[in-house]
Image (cartoon, rainbow over all chains, first blue to last red; front, side):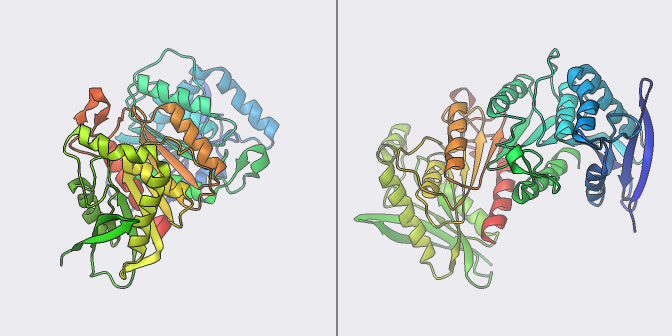
Length: 238
Length: 238
């Protein structure tokens, strides 16, 4: 028994995107699905590993592509250049991730009524913006995600929102935590925010080894947040 | 097969206390134990139910008594009168809950190296103060607990701390959330704070039916926090 893995082409307007789709076809019937939104690095091995890991739980998983043609940055500068257009144009960001949602819903093995989304760092912001767009998705889970407001007119948020946050993350300081709590409450979202002490940015990434720079793996926060994710998915898409 | 239940007398100085001890003796060997600290009402049916529920998981549970002789208030005024001496004397509070910790550790069916504590509302504050006292306890979990600082010289906190918090709880406003995060970080505690949106005080109590007054049962927050507790106990005392 093995996972089925394939690259799936989809589009946002003229932009060609390439997602990594993975599922365990020994599970019968249409499966609940999980979109996985990458860090500023692009759709790399890190998110593909998460996709495989979740697929073994019986979720069809789709590591989406924000940048086009599966592009990945190789340096901090390249990552920054890839991410910046989306940070500067949050409508583009919302449209781009909604294209991924449509793509996963159209897969024949996916039950389109049972789709959730998760993301890491920049990808955490992407799934938060997916929820903010009012998209028809059951739940979104952000791991050490950016929290910055999108500056767009607010929508009601039907998705359940789970934010898992390193409390010492320099990219999401306490004032932004207070602001997102207020914003999600005003939007009527069912939300949770789990803050982990002594935890900085990128806490799920074993390659992150720069605590002084505010980016470091944290074994406990990684395990706790993964467990919480699994429980959240059971709640929202099973 | 049934749970073994008994009332256990213990003391804090001259004060006679009466805890409710419960365990499932079909589990072999010394068991991990969980102290359960009551709301301002006293050691009532609410905490005894929690004790039984956890005992079925293989934990020896001890619904402790802060007030003496198992006293319970019958009115808001009585509850207030019972709680006030402890809110005014946090050293007394710390001594009283440490007496319960000693009592449960002395039970022959308990493994004294594997003890955690949990509490509700006032009891959430009690277990937080237990941690703040530097007590040798593996972890403490607070459900809709008060967060107010105890005003005592700070200790290093060896216990892992889990705070489950209704974000709209009028008894623990956002500025107290920020303050406890700072305090627990300074104390070196391994801490987590889970905030639930649209959730007020007493969210685990089905009898709480006063949302306008900031006290109401919340089915989702109740289920999520219980699940998180079980996972936390597995982590800290298994």
